[in-house]
Image (cartoon, rainbow, N blue to C red; front, side):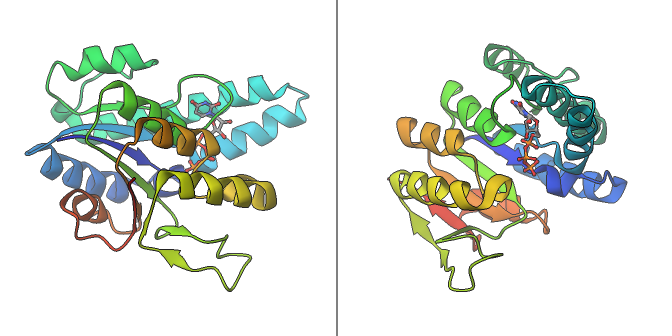
Length: 223
Ligand code: UTP
């Protein structure tokens, strides 16, 4: 299978060698049977840079460019952790991902262009390379009916359709700002290409393997 993984910045920051090694190990294990493309998020590093840049009076597009730089720093850390098992350069657009994939190694990337997050990058990559599965590894343990941090009646969903995902994300984005499980563009792309998607918690790196073999306890998004 071709598997595209969105590895949330909350897992990669602050940077920590043991987490990077643990993720490199599970990525290597998964790569024995599957072709992997991993998209790294910016997490705390991105937020810190964006805060400073905003204080300097920069426009939001400039803030996004600094966020993208942070995602690429995390991507580079993962490339270093994977050593010879990763393609050594970080693609900056979707066509480059396809070219790098030809070498058979794991491709790791960060953001692409302003205006969205790495979840959308991962969803677009999954669409472009015709992936079999999109795995979103995040700080939540799945998709909830509402934001569980602010709504105690929020329930975790085991399985939803892409349309339901779009509706949930649109609703929580309006209320909760930047802490939704996935950005709206990512949800829309999953819907338009019908990409089978799994959302799992990243505290345990082995959840990547469970997401691929179907033994996870996150959320499945499928038509
Ligand atoms: P992230 O994908 O990390 O966003 O990109 P996030 O919402 O903080 O998600 P987590 O917590 O990592 O999972 C960080 C920032 O970089 C910019 C955006 O400003 C985003 O908020 N960015 C990233 C882009 O503008 N374009 C991209 O393709 C990627």
